[in-house]
Length: 234
Ligand SMILES: *Cc1c(COP(=O)(O)O)cnc(C)c1O
Image 1 (cartoon, rainbow, N blue to C red):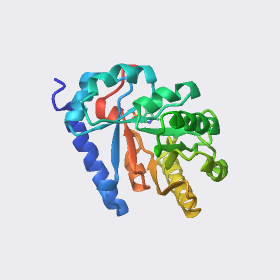
Image 2: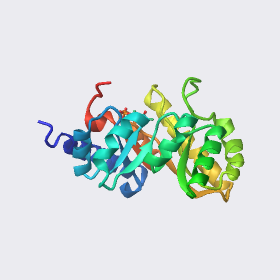
Image 3: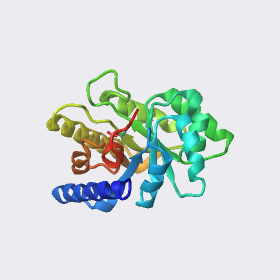
Image 4: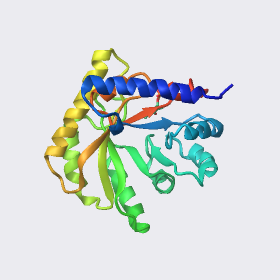
């Protein structure tokens, strides 16, 4: 019964991405899908992989620890998209090639230390920004972004290569405003030409309910769960 379920959904998503690209004059090759696999079992993840989805997004270390052994031989790119506690950083570095969700200097300090131990360089991360006005959501507030980037020059082993945000639950206009604002922040940060970040920043924005708007507003990574796999059981 699962046969082709994900494939069909992926085809629909790809059509929507192409349509959004046409509207906004973008190339669909610029947009990468991260299959958000939290709460999704290994069998479905195998199916996703067979559809060509080889970027998995997870937010729980233990769950990832259990699932990743099934994919040891596969060319998976693992993206950490959850809130990161400092004591989890060693495992996150071990399991994930990318972190999307940093918003505190002490995370950078701990990550830099860990990378120093293993003599790793250029570990890619994104900085999470909260543009919803809701204090409960993770991420830097808009006015703190530039000062935050100024202070990142201390962390030479970390390669800051993007910005991430979670869209609001509001109207389409409100969602669009948030994504557009993240794009403007990206342009502002890039214009500073900091030598300690990549010259162009990726934008991780857009989830199941709002990814077409995110594409129109410049997203480069979409984080898609339910629209690929159906509702999660937990
Ligand atoms: C769960 C999650 C997603 C995926 O959400 P869907 O609505 O299932 O597409 C994307 N980003 C983050 C940070 C998440 O926690």
